[in-house]
Image 1 (tube, rainbow, N blue to C red):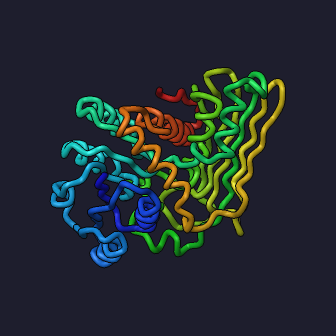
Image 2 (cartoon, rainbow, N blue to C red):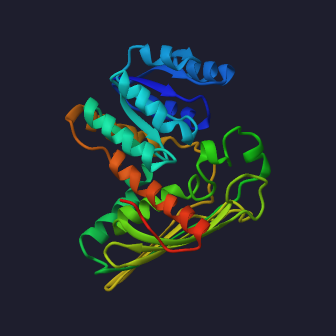
Length: 314
């Protein structure tokens, strides 16, 4: 299977390393706006380098892995679908549910698979949490909480043209760093029906929030909270707590967040996606599933602006 990588940044380097761990696939093309970075990544993958999107998508390939800025995800995915490619998109699927809905419609029309890089759904310890909840081992869901208290130094934002902007990041700590945990909460406990949220910028000179907190109401009647910050020095392990009428489960990451040096989680995700393409199945997180977390984050931002409880648009 021939794979194209769209994006020349750090996450695309992780995608290249993940693909190298899988037999039967080959990265054939890399496209990015930064010529030097893109050519370096293409050399690593023994692939062709492109800076022009149209030329890249015209190169013979079966699927495209998108690691461009978040605000371009749906646009780039639509362009790839238009060339007949299957598409695996980095989180979030996009920063707008309106654009995601158009993408879902186009994927259905084109009969192509669209997946989202929520690789933590395939982590063995998270899979065990999901099984315990689905099998009723903690009873009826009561409460779920996610804490993402990380630290990003000023150069993290200064060194990027898109991080920390509404146009390309779609938000701050919640839409970017917290989105994995938002996805896990709605995957583990089911869809959210309403939220009440607040956001703030406490440290970084960026357009968007570096700190957010929200109360989540789930469709099944359970409640939950999400706390996210990139201003929590020195940074702490992410934690998820799940409580039911018959017991509780807790997961805490083993270490503080670091660069994605280990490509194993993305390898699992890529293998799962390729299996879905080859069998006509559904990937671990398809576009419809990937929409849920973005809808919840949109509702938190709306609540923060209005000061009111907001219904999550399913």
